[in-house]
Length: 341
Image 1 (cartoon, rainbow, N blue to C red):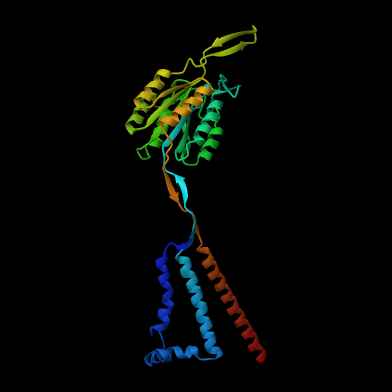
Image 2 (cartoon, rainbow, N blue to C red):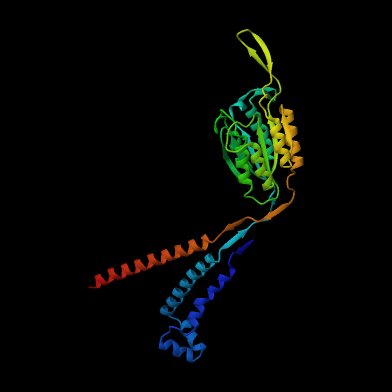
């Protein structure tokens, strides 16, 4: 339906009529006409003749311009049908380890060997797309931590930025888990206290940074932020020795500091998860959906389209025509005067 944002401004439409009727600024002849009665005042405008018709036309034209400007000022709008939107859900930050060890190809995705970061990106993107109604942000950390994406409802952008993540963007020689937590906590504590969650994914132990993981966890606990930690990496990996043509089994996750990750989760009323393969990853994300359910409430939004530019454009167009017509009339009159001379 159509409506005006500021309908009270439409009262300005009567100002020219008031000025026309009241004797303010009128000549003595006009005032005398008023004194002789309202009928005598209106009578000159009802008389025939080109002069009176021209006066009426000019006045109506000017009033039309005024009316168009007033209508534009009142901001006409088209208000559409109500649309149901998801309510504001959780503020959820995801902090991802992108140090060099995340390039280890010890996991499988759809039967193919992939790096740890590749499976994290692929499955985490699916998880994010299911979190309609949540604000989600992305922190990356290696030797240092930085904010990849601030908290936003735009899940498409978050997924795109996640897929653009590469090893080495934050340094690859060491892991600053504490800084990865600290930066996420800093962004989350600016938000309202309810439903603030951090998901931390790492495959190693803290070796750099200004904060230790426990110090950062204490900050999160003080801010009322729940942290779910996920240890990434397989327990066993077969390495081919090409020189001696032999195979040996190794534990690629021997540097994973599970003790610290469990302590972080316990301090903040969260949970620690171990992701050794694709199936465990999917189970973890399903469990997180249960622990932090998506908001089911909704809000109503009515799209609004501004229409003020239509009456404003018409008014400007008519004024331009008036200027051109006046200029042409004066030009023709001057040329005619020259010919008579």
